[in-house]
Length: 109
Ligand code: FES
Image 1 (tube, rainbow, N blue to C red):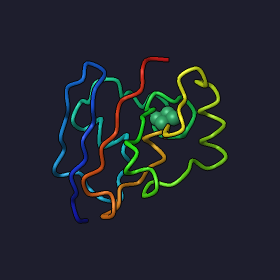
Image 2: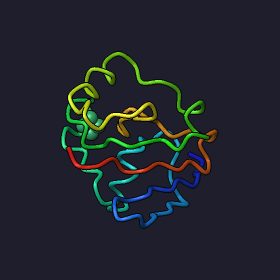
Image 3: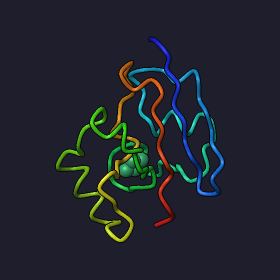
């Protein structure tokens, strides 16, 4: 599978640049392989925990699209920190169109 570059901005403001992110793999799993701080993935990617919550930088929102109904429901559980650009990393499968993607790790729940 092709690889792309994805950047996570951690809670302390530091950036983790992953330049070998594999397409077809979720944003959450990609973060976990590089120990991105704050991306836990407690439910294993089944859209149940929101410990993979990120804010998508505005330029990338259209590329990633909107959350589906199940993702919206899980985000409601952390509604106090949800923004218009919130996504759950486990529900975003990387594609070549996402090369250069930048996301911010959301605050703790
Ligand atoms: S890993 Fe649990 S909702 Fe994404």
